[in-house]
Image 1 (cartoon, rainbow, N blue to C red):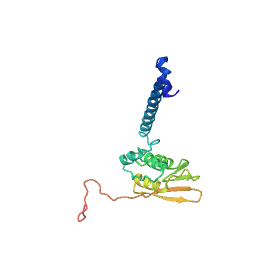
Image 2 (image 1 turned 135 degrees about the vertical axis):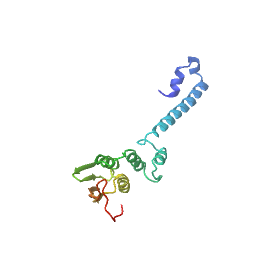
Image 3 (image 1 turned 90 degrees about the vertical axis):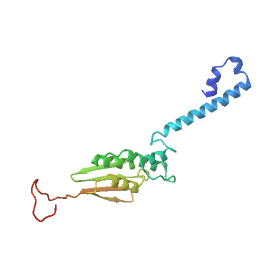
Image 4 (image 1 turned 45 degrees about the vertical axis):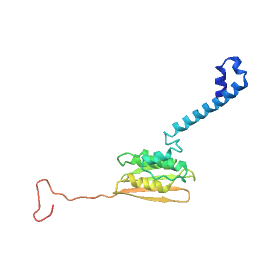
Length: 180
């Protein structure tokens, strides 16, 4: 049932037969439908998964660069990855980041390192450079990783960590002649 029909159903029968009233209700009904569409479009901007013209605001809030020429799906993936970041670097966090940039990501964890395998079919891997930038933003500086990409959109991220040691003195002990 259209908006015009709903409006007309509330009127007395004498008005329903009037051509002028029919045209007036058609115009009012069209305007009400346009308003409903605008309300729905505005509501969609509150969620990055459905935002279109509101992505600019999301990118501004998250301090991401805005590129209007980039496809919406790539921009949404960046926003979602940034929103999914946690304060600490964890294996689970890498898995979340990889799955936001590629729908078919598989993460295998080992002691001291892990591999992320993303097998794309040309559509799932949105942007490798953005994935690298996001990992670099969230990883600790002592964690390294390697990226491998073949023609089948296969991406392996291998990480490892380096052990560092610091010589320290016991509390209350000082060596003469050394700078502390």
